[in-house]
Image 1 (cartoon, rainbow, N blue to C red):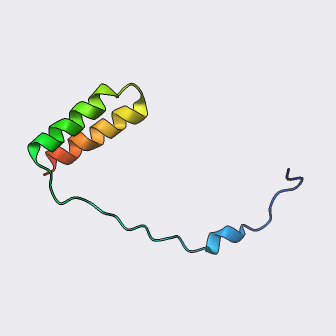
Image 2 (spheres, rainbow, N blue to C red):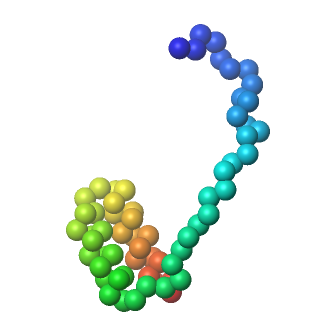
Length: 62
């Protein structure tokens, strides 16, 4: 437990790790439909609904 405030944040100068982003170049329509079906069946919370919205937005930008 901290008893006094921290004066200096030593983590500010730590370098961020680089995360390589792997993205499929394309999906066939059947794969998009399967993704929409999968996530729409499970969209029972705002987080899961957000996942469905992201997939649908991705489809419309192709």
